[in-house]
Length: 202
Image 1 (cartoon, one colour):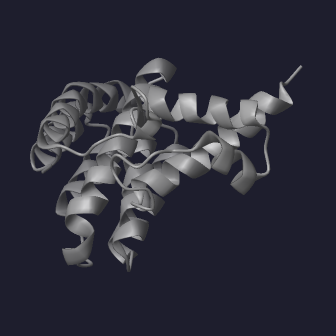
Image 2: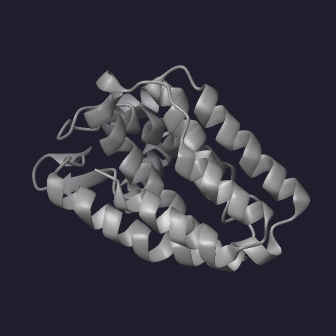
């Protein structure tokens, strides 16, 4: 049987994570369990579960005498995220390409188009994450995909904080090259382009 409290805490955690990613909560800001319970109309226990999930994702930290706070943004963590994504995403794509269905390839192409047509940094960032997850959908490694999904969520926060103000709409040639390689069934080429693409993260 599904635990309704657990399901509700997942929904609250998802809403909170989006707020942290877009900068609605500032680094170091205290996340008050009672305020979150009130704002989302849930119990204190549910709010606490949601906050613990946020901490597990790396979006919040527990500080002595302050409790749960929004995790800091720092240069070292960006470099760590970049190195981890470089290690995991090209490998996942290499395993994914031979197994992608026509439906999955069409979904990846739709998300590539959504990136190119996005009119705001937030819309682009969300479409970009969907694209990166769509191209590895065939790898059949759920734990790997979950880790990559979380790395992208953490990087999204840094991207929006640093780049959103000067973001401009553009077509992404790397995304296009990745899709061409996927459509031709060339996993090594797709993986190589993705590695080059991720090297540009800043």
